[in-house]
Image 1: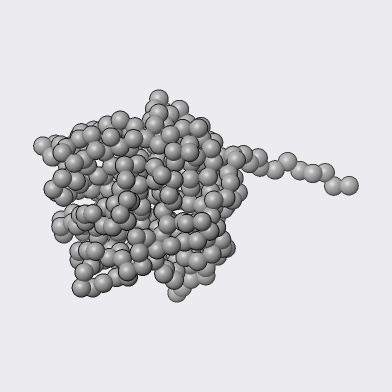
Image 2 (image 1 turned 45 degrees about the vertical axis):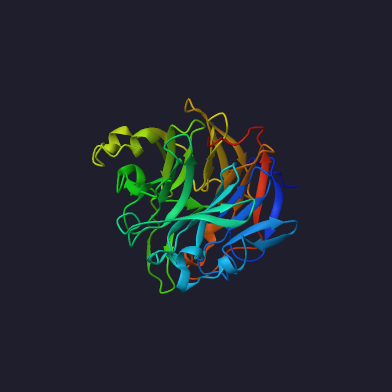
Length: 364
């Protein structure tokens, strides 16, 4: 009789919330009323609507189907390719539209931040960006909010460009003024020495013609502290975690060349896509190389709370008032672009959740 050999130990208690059999999702957010919203960027799948709400066992276009049809006559009021959705806990769903299907040059006026009123399910305000903020190489990735500063609060957005400078875009929500910070800084740039490995294989761009290139993506992961004073961020192709005071980001008297001196380094957290903060200031970060999710305490101590073979690329996180951590799992690394044009993804993609016993961080 052959002995049973030891094998890797898995842990963490996830439950399935929703299984996706259509396009690949990237973003999830849970409102204060428990409504769940999902987004589907246009990366090559058949995306019938780029923003949806899970209602019962169905995906319904949100706020309606018409808004999800690109209207060249009214590009700012229709969604093009949404990468991130964030409910602020105060009745607004924020929609971050890259305006860049398939990572193309953003359509003029198409890259935008949209506020949707969850009571009326209508667009309340749209923030567009000037050409010195959204560059031809820009890919708007994630966004966090703080209403405790300024007259209407501020938004912080990561530019996760694969060909140009990474950055954090700061938006004054009162007047829409936006500006780039840490543009091309080491902390917002891909780690040139990092070689991602997922499912035991090196992850790199592998094209249909047989050519290859390193996989490089700039600042992506984003979380804001429970008091709004610290912004945590990380490039997608890096294992390093950085932070900066939001006050320094907003202070335009600090030249961008001096701003890196205000950045703090937290060490290696693992290579993450999504991050989120709870009401106690604990940061939750994925580790896509190890099918894991990690907690990072305010004192820097890190703890792995889940290591699960089903967590095949933990993308976006959200924390609900039900004290669950929600996570989109989408097998991003199995896309055709990484495998000579062959799609290795296996449906369904999933929305999972695990009880963490903590509330989401407030925005006010």
